[in-house]
Length: 506
Image 1 (tube, rainbow, N blue to C red):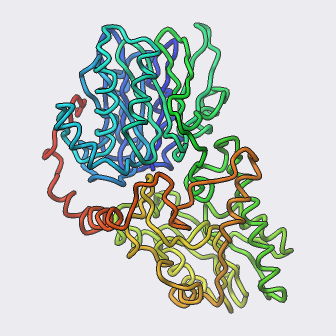
Image 2 (image 1 turned 30 degrees about the vertical axis):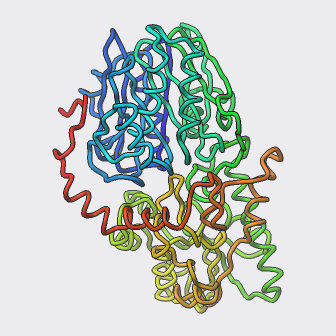
């Protein structure tokens, strides 16, 4: 999961890209990068850290140009080396920079093809570099000195024919413009919008609509599955479907956790979908525990707050903010490594004792993935004097790895894998545990847009919609991306082991 943005404007885009990445910071806190184009040159700054730490005044002054792209990174595939911060760049053809959100499931095969057939060198183990080189090769083989919109769309079609997995992409072609495209299933999100300026219309692509809102852009549409949006430096925009077989199945975990609630994704309000999640949970509680003795409902901030509010209203139970979040601790789910996540939970949350003492408390979380957070919070609640501690998850049990851009690579890290609900309840220490049903979760999202009645739900049902994921693939993924492997890879890469090409490091 990463955040991406691209802008074609009538004035310098550096500040707008910075602001967009700041708004999208929840999608990745490991690294950030911006590339702009002006006077025949690409200007780039990228590095590890939050947006505010990567970009200083001196860097912003050098990022001149009316077109540019940006990226905030959350490492799923590859290491967290600074050299893997995006955007990535190739000089041929034309000079292309690319930022990617998602994961390619056939990156290994493509890497071999790029070397053996396309005669291209890959400098990192990032699937984003693979995707960039596939796109560059597809564009280069057309042999055009000046690429037209048809050529760019033809190259995107070539990408769709070769690449499998989940991907939303923004790319900048030096001198010519910015292109955004989305995988044929629309797994990873991408939207575009327009803004009127004194110089004329300006266009922006972003992972979430909230980035458009923050910069005064009006949402035009989501980029459809298999669709591409090409915005030329002149400001002319072209939109075209570039995949023959497109099937709308966006990732439902965006609505559960990843996206900001004030975003509209695929025509669905994330806020409304989370309200419905809470209502459906309440209905299930009334079915399964009609004589419940819940005194108070407490959300685990922040992403579960909306569902907890609607759940409390439906049940007629008091809603209370019983846990205070330390705003200076990032999202523990996307922290690299279980030890870091575990350590950060108690740094992040603190219980308000008076909301727990001598009460039967229902804790509500957006999901239970590794069980780290909920286990420790249940202990906090008991230490604060709770009589009984119940636990509700707005999502179904997470039983399977995700391969499309979410860091759930190994079943060994998933508390629900191979366990019954009762066994999970015992493991986390709750008095009783209730999960959202998958049908209900899908309904909560599809109600916002009846045109979408299916979603990418592989973490819940093990259905890998790209059709190329088998047990051998999952075993290799787990071996490559577990905490030990990542730690070893990061230790060996160091700051200077890989060349951070075309980067302003000062």
